[in-house]
Image (cartoon, rainbow, N blue to C red; front, side, top):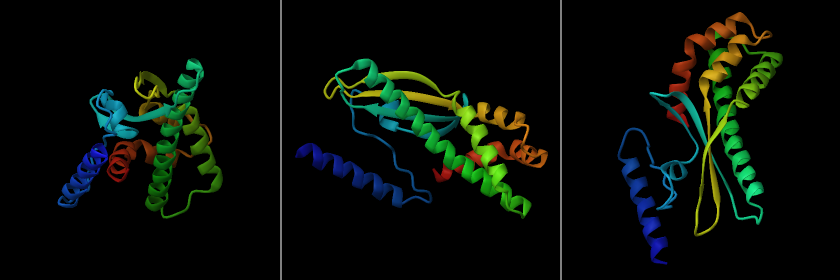
Length: 181
């Protein structure tokens, strides 16, 4: 009961502090004291010295089959990246249609989505962590947005206008996306 009160107090304090700033920033922490930072931070889009990245964290409960548990955590981490990437692609399409004053036709949207799905195959599992108390396994996956950029640049059925717009605005779009994510 005390642990629940402490957790709720920390959450309330984080919300209160976030309300005092111009931009709401809530530090993500699942409260797993022995866990690596990436487990507590969870899935997120980041831009740092390593580039523009999407980090996905997946978890699988104890299953009795360690390899199945690890594969499940891996797949869930990749699914988290796919979820974030899908939201990013929606934002890119909205930005493109707003800048051109027209709507992207459905074939272009389909091509963008299938091309980014190919780039998603480049997501790599970088690590695992097992919570010894619960036996939950966590997986950490990373997708470098450079792979998405390259996939879109080489897609044959995308218009040169879209490719040019994407290339010129990829970093700015990602930065805006990180602010809203």
